[in-house]
Amino acid sequence: MTPRPKKKLKSNERPQVPHLQVSALISLLLVSAICLLTGGLSYSDSMDAPLCRGDFDSDGDVDAADLVVFSENYGRTNCSCQQVKFVKPGESIQSVIDSIKDASVNKPYIVVLPPGVYVESARIDVPRYIDIIGSGKARAMIEATTAITSSILELDNEDVIVKGLKLTGADWGHNIDLLSIKDCRKAIIENITCRKAQGNGIAIDHSVQFVSKCLWIKNFDIASVRSSAVRNKGLGYARVYIDGGHISTNPSFPEAHGIEGHFVGSIKNIRMTRVGGSHFKIHGSQVGLTISDCHLEQAVSGIGIHLRDCNKVIVRNIAMWSMPDYPMDYAVYLENCQDCIIESCLVSASTGSNNHVSFYADADSKNNTFRNNRVINLTGNQKKYEVSACNTIIDNGEIVQAGMVSLQHWSYSELDSSAGAITGTLPDGTKIGQRKTIVMTDATASSTVSVTHHETSDPEVGTFDAVDEFWILEWMGTKWVTIKATCSF
Image (cartoon, rainbow, N blue to C red; front, side):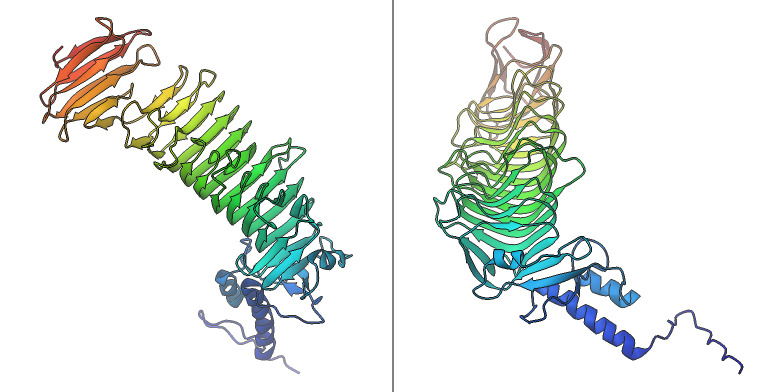
């Protein structure tokens, strides 16, 4: 019998596939993907049946893009299969976890929490290859009783995902950590809400330094804790990637920091409102921590970002807003730090602190670079920079307006007296050969600048009463020296 010739396909024509077979496969996998995406799984006595995760584009999550990839390629055959267990009404979460005896890399499990409140009287321990997936951080809440004395949820292994939950203590004084991560490698914490605890929101307790294994914390909301929202309290560095979240700790407790500990990795897209301590209290972090794209306001302790004993940490694109009721003494404070970069930050100076310094580096901090930072609303004795020698400032100048103002000691200062007379003071420089230029750009009111330490007199006072009058000085180590001036003395 002569074989039938194959039909030649047109350029825009796909190969024909049996309609019923494809339709059934698409329906099965799309329903599975949508159920996992929406939390729409229902109870069944046969919930041990394998379900495809639905991550068809391999980007780590399940969303509409996966359906597009599936429809174009008729799905994948190599997606990992997971067994699904539901926590039913009246069951404890731990009992469901303990009923799983065969979890492995080839047979991972999902424990699903449908909407509801789960009151737990014992710590929940999550072993390897078991994920805890709630139906949403506003829909599935785990509430601790006072019988729990350490943490509500503890991760002490690797390859674990926890997402879509709300964790809450029994009351405001419940002395527990809400989520504890102990020596856990390759874990993802996502869409978590933490409320009410005497301890930390998320506590990381690494006893050894992990280099190749990582911890991801994404899209969280932590508030009303009396210790830090996210804290590494172990001996080892935590390699973390924190991306997207809101933090507000109890303002009455100075140890209630936003993010505290020693980290490597990156922290970004965090909004902090009203914390009892510092927004960031980072110590001992070495080579490889970046803090970026955050909005910080109301640090009750008076420090926005506190770096101590850090090396090669980068801080960039941070907006820091100080409020009159919670004045910020320092926006960025460097203590014994080397080779750090602080750049492109915007600070609104504190109206409640006369001694506000936006960027500070102590005498033990060396070779740090401050670059292209801006401060607004400086008044009185407040300063933009107070940094020791051996640090570098690469910055734009400033516009000085009415009132008594301390000028920055680098770059240029423009005197704009349109709103009234200016009485300025120039503090000491930091490096021999440093140049300073002062120029009047609006001469509505006659203004003065007093140079505290000058070779001619202490102080030397220059008067500016015409546009473009200037004063150029150079710091010689102990005194300013006039290079050229058109203002009067």
